Length: 503
Image 1: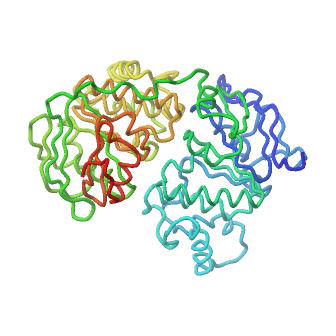
Image 2 (image 1 turned 45 degrees about the horizontal axis):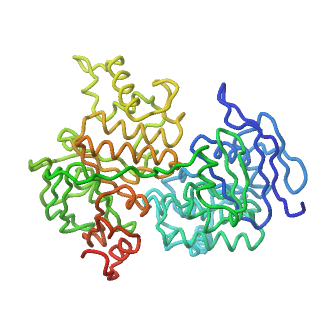
Image 3 (image 1 turned 90 degrees about the vertical axis):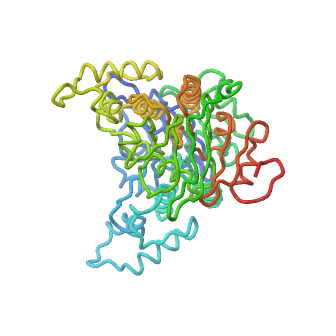
C-alpha cells in the first residue's frame, strides 16, 4: 500500500435530514488519474469538499500517506498537498490574472511590497502550458473558457500530491481540453494523483485509469477503465440502462417558419448571417468557441451588440430596442452561464421562475401575488419534472440538473414563441441530460421554436434536426440527416473542405 497517498473510509455527511454521504470509501494511488462519476446530487462535490477541508465529515477516517489526519480547512489541505479546482469559477474579477493565479503565495508572503514584474513572469510561465492569456489582464474581462484555464493555472502553482479537477473541461474548447489532458498525464507521470470529475464518458475512457461511481451518496463501484464499457458506468450511475438519451426526431418539420434571420451583422463579431427555423424542428448551432455562436443569439434578442439586418418571428418583422422588447415579442435566451447570469441562486425556486416578467404575477399596484407566483411555478415544475422540497427553497439547494430545469421554466413562464438555449446541459449528469433533451423535443413538438447552441457535437447530432455551423462570424454551412457527423461539422467549423457537408 506504499503507493496509496489518500484513503477515505466510511465517510458520512448530513445536512439536516439530507444524507449527502453514506459510508463512502475512496483510495487514491500515486500517479493515477481516477475518475469520479455520478449523477448530480450523488455526493461527489460533498466528498471533494471534505477532502479539501471545506466540510468536516460526521463520521469516518481520512488517511494521508499512511497516517490518519483531520483536514480542518482548505489551507490545511494545501499544506498537505491537496489542490482543488472547483467546477464553479471563483476568481476575483477586479484584480489581474497574475494576482489570481498566485494569490495563495501572496497571502503567505511576508514582504511589504509586491514584486509585480516577478509575479507576472511566474504567472506567464504557468499560463504558457495552457493558453495565450495576458497575466496583466483583469480577470473579470476574460471569457468563461479563459477564466476556467486561470482556475486550472492556480492549481498548477501549488506543490500538489493530489489534484482534484471538478468538471474542468465544461467551458473549454476541444483544443484547450486536449492541452489539459496532456498536462494531466505529465503530472501523473510525476507521481501526482488526480481525481477527475466529469459527466463526459469519452473523457473518462480516453484519459483515466480507474473510475469510481457514486449514487445517492453511496459508493457503488470502483472499476478499471480498461476492463469496462461506457454503458457500465452509466448503468452504475443511474441504476438502470439509459437507451433513450436522445428522443425521436420530428418525422417532418412543419412548413411554417418560426424564425427568419436575414443578413444579420454586428460591427466586429459576425456578419451576413442568414438562417431560418421551421416549426417542430430543433435547430442546432455549432462552431468553435469564439466563432460567434452565442453573440448571434444575443444579438437577435438584443441582449448585446448593435446589429443590422432583419429578424422575422412567425411571419412578422421585429424592430427591437432591448431584451425586454424581445421577451414581450416572445423570444428569450437561456444563458450558458447558469450560475452567473441564468439564475439567482440565493432566491427561491418560485421567485426565479417568475423573474423574467413580474407583471404576469403582480397585483394591481405592482405588488407580487405570492399565490399566483407559486401556482405558476408549481405548474411549470410539474411540466418539466422538477424535483424539489418546497418552492420557497433557494435554487442553490437543487442539483445541477434541477437548477437547469428551473432556468428553462423561467423561459417558459412568459409563454415564448422561441427559445435560444446556450449549452443547455453543461455540467448536467447523463440522466438529467436525457430528461432535458426530452423536454426540448416536447417543446418543439408543441410549437415552441427551439434553437440549441452546444459545444458537444454528439448532443447536437442526437438532438437536432438540422445544424448550422458558424465559422469566424459567418455561416460556414449546415448539415442535416445523414450529413450530421462530427467530421462534417468540424470540417465546416474549421474551414477544411469535406465532401459530406453542404457548403
